[in-house]
Image (cartoon, rainbow, N blue to C red):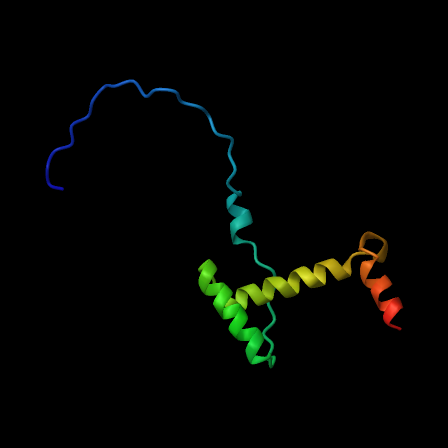
Amino acid sequence: MSGKIKYTDEPLGDLKVIPDFLPRPEELVFRDEGVKVTIALSKRSVEYFKGEARKHHTQYQRMIRRLLDAYAEHHSRPSSARSTRIRTKLARAG
């Protein structure tokens, strides 16, 4: 890589503008307030998340945290916005 670079004046061909899809910098630094907890999980669950995390090149604890966040978000909505499937299933079981 010690050789000189030779630049040419060739046409660039068909160029097109791509809309900006990247998040704003302030969206990248925002994090929810975290609370450290100690929890005992089943070995089967932890092994599952560790395996999935390896496949997706992420951390298993992050996956568990996002799963819990999604669950809490879903169930914190007003009941009319949620699916009635679970309530129907519980009514049948009762």
